[in-house]
Length: 129
Image (tube, rainbow, N blue to C red; front, side, top):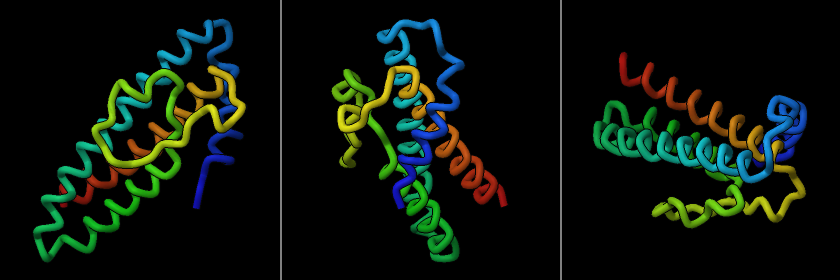
């Protein structure tokens, strides 16, 4: 299920927070948030791959891996950031496919970051048991 329409709606509502910044500054902020979220996902995937080896934990670990894969499906690449990272093999939607402002892009990236941070928190609680 693609969450992009819901994220975009939230982004529009949250967009007022960043009024007054210029587009380049906003896109740089969005790229930083995006890259931090990607790093969180990469770290989580690495720790979960180790847990998959444990037969007692592998089913739960796979659920979290699937949650991360679903999160990746909703990613939106920040214009100009495509070459800055990603030795990963997943596809991001290009922001050019959507008509959103730089302010909305920041809000979209913040929403996606909140989502991956929530998955990370659940994984850390799971690993702590």
